[in-house]
Image (cartoon, rainbow, N blue to C red; front, side):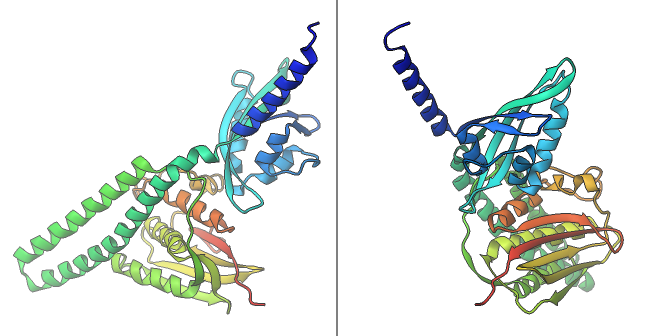
Length: 361
């Protein structure tokens, strides 16, 4: 045995540990019988787990944001087939500083004959890799949103002007109004295509937090929506006195506007959408309720995936499949939760999000 063998081995091990820490790569192994997981320190860091904590499969599931857990379930389900024993997916976890981290999880199922006995795999924190895209995407998102809001208002006024001109019988100016509305529609489509082509997952989001009165914000969203959706009645009910949250007003308006627009789009033949604001423990909950086509239980979490479209909805309304993804990102970065469920009072859906309440004292 060479004289410096053990010293060289120690140095190599130290170098390997440093290299794995630098790339944030963790290793793990799951025993499918005991459900216990053995892993490296870096894997604990990736999932924000304490150094001496006993890790089980449920521990890892609980560490993943609820709206991302279905990705793990689907990947694992496919990997339980000996012909396709590997999986690769991305999920979000929340660290102690309340920041969202993206992890890429890869695994291989080990079989004894045809029985799966354990899974070995890796996790890597890919938040930094995504960070390069943040500034570009933030600028794009802000620009398109800031253009879409006034454009919707302009289009609403053009439609009102067209109705007025139609009553006068002035065919020349009616044609001008129609062409202006058509042109505004083309601009909307162009902005949608820009967003689809450039949007990426975000590991961080710039928030400008301030005190926000959610009742005032909801009334503002209703007023803007009424300009473009004349056939729908939007109502607001408030069941709490404390309506103040610390949040990014523009971002929360973006979420509420998207949920209201979805409720309208997917409620053909209906004419009413309700918004409710209520206290829920130390949170304030905002719900958007419709009587539309509804959503299946299996798709209630999938709709928050980027570019996901509910099956058989393209005949009802067009969409890019990014709206709810953005809503999920915004609420997650505010420390809240967002869900879409079947309407318990009948047909349709209830989309709701909760935010930490600003409590005095």
